[in-house]
Image (cartoon, rainbow, N blue to C red):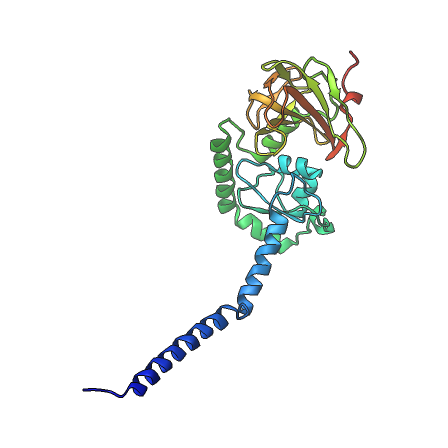
Amino acid sequence: MYRPLYLNIKFVAVLILLILLMGLGGCAQRKSPAPVTSIEKTKIQTTKKKYLTNKKNSFKDRKWYKVKKGETLYAIAWRAGQDYRYLAKINNISKDYVIYSGQLLKLTGTVKASQNRPQKQNKSSSNQVKKSTGPTNKVNKTVVRRTQEEYGRKRDTKNNQLKVTEKKKFSNKIRGWKWPVGGKITRKFSSAAQGYKGIDIVGRKGMNVVAAAGGKVVYAGSALRGYGNLVIIKHNEDYLSAYAHNDRILVKEREYVKAGQLIAEMGKTGTDSVKLRFEVRYRGKSVNPEKYLPKR
């Protein structure tokens, strides 16, 4: 059946108008502001990123840190320029100083008086503790067994014996420091705020690196950016020393070493030349290593 021409034109015009309206509607929809929930989510993600991402290996102005695989509290405290005991206190970490991958740590904060003061116990609560001795002993045995399996070495089963064993390994005084490696110092320590916090000693790849003093290896790995293969040794409750840029690490964490014992081989990991970066920390603060090392 034949339709008038003007009806066909009218139909085409209506169709074009509908297409244009649909296009404008889509544009308007795309340009609409984001929902409030999306904005809030973005703010939270930005805040987390600000505190948790690495920025040039610096902890300046950072309040939180997310623990990565292989890191220890000693290593994080080293990067933050803090005493490991301080970080333990503000994060309510026990004296075994165990932390876990993915754990969020506060890098700044105040230590409450209650954290340093033992809580008083009344008679009724002490009686309750005595009555629950059985389950408590089971928990303690489980913790000790788990510690043995994790670190692969024998330990005493009583907590008191553990403390005595630990104290015997450490002395309050360091019985003389030794040079960690022979070679020329090419970069010296600086006490300036942005100064170099160690000394660089040049040498050949594979040269022996020894412990500057006896102590316990509290970090052995490469998770600290800028240090390469790094070893940190705890000498006593006050002093730590670090040996960076090694080619190979020859000790394991929680291993006890003697002064002059071989711990690594010199290399250039994390840097552009073969050298040893040697640092000493006293209660978390960088000190000049040359003040402790014997004169050559």
